[in-house]
Length: 474
Picture 1 (tube, rainbow, N blue to C red):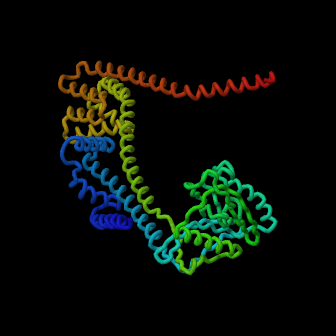
Picture 2: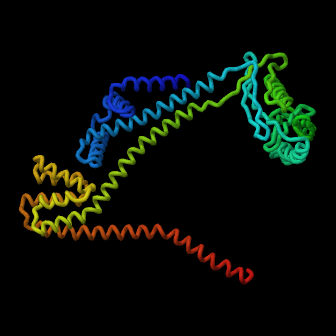
């Protein structure tokens, strides 16, 4: 993993260094560099088909959202910003992943003298995952460090509660002490109790320190053995015995070493319960030990979260643009009847089409007015009037506006005879269509209210029926 993190970190640093000549903030600089070096030369925008169609659609939508701007330039800036954001997210998370990996793997070196600080009185205990190293041999064990607490009277009271709980957990899923067919639970502690349980093994050595059973060769009558536990808390010591019918395990040399290692480590912890710190054993059977607290490497999680966040951010920008386009089209659809009505009224008052168009465009500040003002600016800059109306309909991208622009263009070619009547008819049809949409939205809202209204009806009926039955003694 270290090599992967180093490659990602170095690649990101190289991109940041090479993009320093670009203009703009850090996000824009890196986005421009990646867009030019990879997207432009790697295939984005080249060829034909779906990619070109997608690029053209993006340019059109961004030009609609930002009237008067160059669609291609806006599309480039849009993609550069998205790519820059995603790259920085991934690079920052890869740097954090590298730091976490180094901290958890390379900065955590074994020590001959390993000191653990005990929790204060009344606090919860803590569990440590330790790595013991003796020559070529390494063993990982779990160690629970109990805090200093409880008086003698409190210990006696807790012990009376602890013993039945220990007996319950010992049998685990077995039917009873005479029918032990699965592993038993040899817990060194129970949550909520300060006692440490030292399992000294059974009388015939048939139970492993982890509670596992070797019952492949057991006879039909089984083997009865006594399991002994020593319950310790400071000076408080009690013995516990339980009879089981099991088969003893055959321990290898490595398993015997692990058993002695765990026992000696737990013994060292139990002997110094009243001390704020204690030392782990430095040898087992004359063999020296080196200790390390094993910490989980969370670097890969950090990197994956960073990649996921970058993907979601990239996708979120796309969804935000689609919502803006949808909101724009909705507004234009709702504003169309008012536009046609105003145009018909102004033409009926004797104004020309161009003058009426300018009159409406100089009114409110909204999306439709901005599009109409753009038409006026185009005509002032020398664009033919008919061409400006056609481009207005195409930018709006709705069939109503395309029809409206066609009417205005035909007026220029064939004269104004019949235009007022056509606009009045179009205004009437637009109002009818608005009424139809309003009725449809009302029906949909009523359908959505059926479920909560049904729930309220049921609650009301229960409030009436339950007291009525209660009054009859039912």
